[in-house]
Length: 249
Image 1 (tube, rainbow, N blue to C red):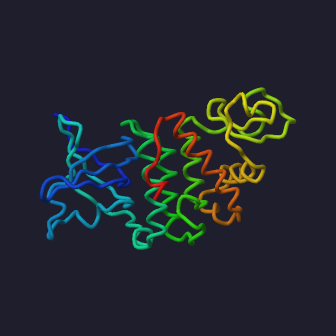
Image 2 (image 1 turned 45 degrees about the vertical axis):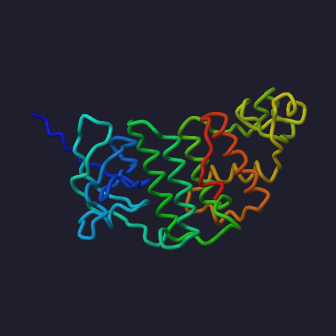
Image 3 (image 1 turned 120 degrees about the vertical axis):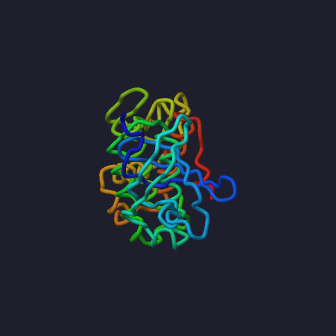
């Protein structure tokens, strides 16, 4: 009989209380994509799993498959705890934005190695990133990660020409979620576009083209980060019908 226990790498994205001692964990795994699992007794003082299953932890995990949607965690080995990210409020807030974006954009039990690799690189960069914005939602690392996730999920905003009329030499002045990208002045009203500055377009292009670890070093202006955030949130709302709660914190 085939074993019903599987081993995979995973990142803990969310942890919810269940009963008096258990937790339900939302994981993103290398081999199985999004997974829901129960960690039994994890809230007890003597639990051998508890400290290894905090949000943002990168682990190697044993999952026992059951008939329900929730699997059971039977073993955990810590790969990277990301203590520096969890113990600093600003970094933790940036990390939770990334975790919620993963939960909403990659909600299926389907492996996506590129998305998992992006997630682990994001967390590695998060451990050393400075406080780079007035609030975490405007952090360049958070914005870079979300833009890369939009790209991997098929919602990359088109920025090289007008997404409405196709003009390649027109000045782009807005972002239209319906058209799927930046639009020129002649199409902005028709395409129901949000205002988008040249700084914002260049900033988004830089965030998409650069490795996650280099996002903060791009030196983006506040105008550029605010425009990038507007593009990200508009893409979520139009393509997925959701907003991230962590972006309003």
